[in-house]
Length: 109
Image 1: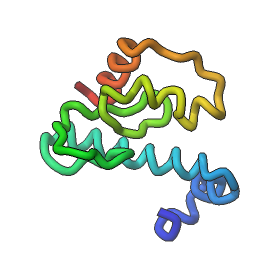
Image 2: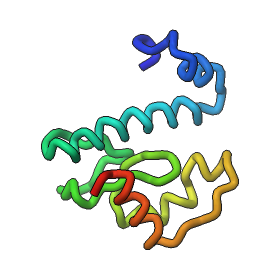
Image 3: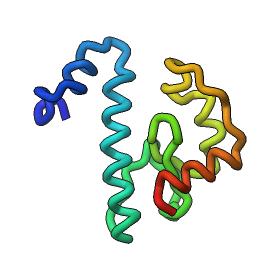
């Protein structure tokens, strides 16, 4: 990303950010775009934020509504307390039901 998109304004700004949060958000946005394309086409590899320890069903992975990292639905609520966007922006916590509903909408399901 750095070598290919170095001239883009958002990448230039992210490179100046010493915390790495901005670069992580740009990466997540690109992964989300790719994953939505995979879901729409019905084939391909999902880019998820953490490697699963066992076989997983792609239907069980959804994006975080704040940072757009993809993860198992069952971990969305736990991730909410660790989400990098939650650290930077004061976002009120959502219930697990609302998280999954909004995540389903974002993923086009």
